[in-house]
Length: 319
Image (cartoon, rainbow, N blue to C red; front, top):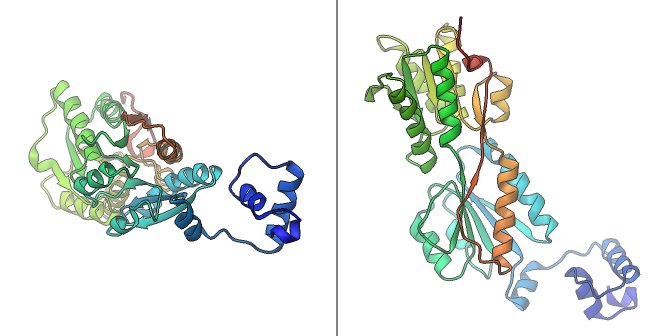
């Protein structure tokens, strides 16, 4: 490339690394020749020489891939704008990628990856941004969804509509699930509405578990007036089971979710919308800032909002 462009190898290196000490005309000539020669940067070689990989790892649980698409889009937009590369991996493979010789830092959204592993990596100077996980490790940046206020607003809207008999379909024991359930029970207590432990159903955030939970409700003595679900997938599965049984939504049972996936909008599911593109973009911003020396580790909360649709009315009192 240097020979074809009539410049030194140092100048080519400066262009490829985005340094500004090169004239625009030279930069354009070098980049044009790179394209003509179909040149690809050897990232392994660059990492070996510089000790920096310029690669970000995003690790997520593999049970709900559709949910992560907007997060990945946000991460990739920022990562690529900063001339970093992105590696995406699912449950069970995070440990072998979390090394500075392989990746510069990690955005973690894998519930199966334990806190001890993250603490051990962070204490060795490996930058980590944890999504939906609160940790007492000062070297991990935590980015959380502010679950409590929108879930309160959602349940208050159901109460205003006159719903008095509830079931809650929760997921695995995570911070998100606990906060959503806490908001749900707090509103019921404040309004003098009893909630019995047997009305708490447990799923795994997959659609199938929502379908199975609704089947259990259908064989019970009576259906709840409202089923509040900890995520959209389980709510969608429950709606399918109810409709197969001839149960009308929301006339017989109101159903709500949490996330606002594309399918939720298509099916008219009342839910809480999480700005996942922005969440991914912010996570990448914070991680790269820390990789480049910012050392900012305070917890950051993402705001979510209620979206009322046909599955649970409009949140106002019914006639």
